[in-house]
Length: 192
View 1 (cartoon, one colour):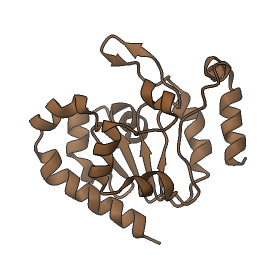
View 2 (cartoon, one colour):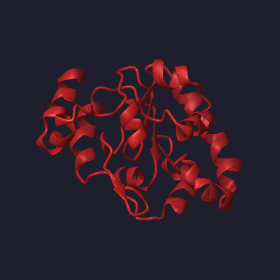
View 3 (cartoon, one colour):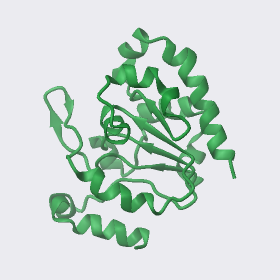
């Protein structure tokens, strides 16, 4: 199945009919040259409206954390992004609703086959970490023990400005984790 065939299949999936009827495309960034994969939650409303993931304050912070600029992040084909859901799930009581259950399990394997050279997968937030690491630990505990999951996975906190309090309470994140993250991303992008 080609990438365009996968995209069409996602649009035609009855689970996504409400989005397809509104002409909202699934949001993900996939390239056969990708070496770093970012798995996050689900697009926010602004991302869905813009048609681009991480083109906001969270994205700027994430690119800073990774040590890459926008051209590498969006245009090089070396960085892929697969949210746990490709559509904005709606607003909840305290922020956006979680990704729809079963969505990533259905579509990620199909898209991962299109990216045979992934060297490092960044797992942003609890939904991605629970799905890929099968851990029941808290986000803080999982991220604090990031070295346990290398070289394949690197768990991260969400780069949202809403996490400023969490970042302030966990100074080890900036002091120890972020320098290692930049090293691992640079290694993955350079590895042949």
